[in-house]
Image (tube, rainbow, N blue to C red):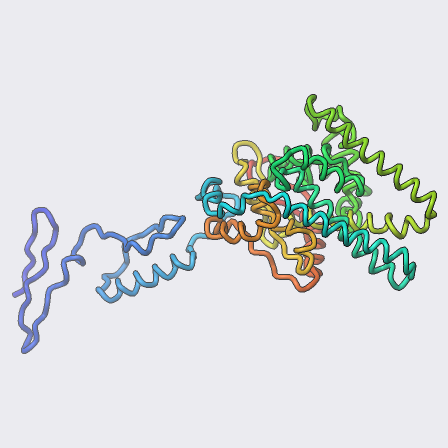
Length: 431
């Protein structure tokens, strides 16, 4: 008769084999005996520990092998039974991301940076010469869009100068930055300093510098005209000149005034230098208007300038808003430089990617603004395995990014304000 033998230290011991007719019935393998079991090594996820509970039924050796194989496949694909929370602290550090990026991506090549300046200026002056030569209403619409896009491209390289990713030489960065930004009436140092504040506080409800969300109480206090100007197209896409003069809602000062609270006392001289460069550009434009006539200057400069503003506001807004998944914003101790930087969004602009120097490869740019624009794509690809689900893959664009117009419209309609309380909050729409 079969019998169970109680073990003093190991619980139940298996029965010895006994003969059933001509066949031999073998005892259960020892690893299926009662007691603690070790999870298979390949069922542990790379970034998240797998929580294992005891099975409800007795498994065979073959079932265990199948489950181990399936667990390995799930780990390789990065799947998880738990729903991803974008507002949770990431399981990696800034140093982990930095280590994944190839060393050459950090190298700033001054001659290569200069080559983009030369390329863009050749196109700008070529377009202007062609427009003045033909002076045809068949050519002007093409010129306005193309030249406005090139103004935007020049601004992006000036933006790189402000980050120090153009060159190792800060004086060269300053000179080139003024040359590139003054033609579009952007005060290089004034904007550089406020943009530095934006990078240092990205994702913080109160401290972020541009396109930060309105708390509900502030939103409710806006009159209907102000709401329409902020959330109804095309007005938000014309906000940049206003921002330069009076900053964002809830903030005071001007990018042109050295005593604005966004500047430190030792930065006043830099701010005055950049303001003077913009005034000099206004003088040049006034002289050209006198020589060439107001209508010609409107066609040559004013309309492309408006296109440039549209590009700037369109791109910068969508780098921080409009994803189909909700993006967290932070307050207090929940905010960190890493968590704030991870709220940015990469976008695909098709043929425009190369023209505007991959500025919408934005996540890595925000985390490491010292990386030159010509290395951003490679650096992003290298960092993706570390970022995991915290990286939002951009929707592929056709030759022109018309698909982003839908994202812009949806975001302006739905992303109105955030809660007055809470350290991790998300945009809400009007009831």
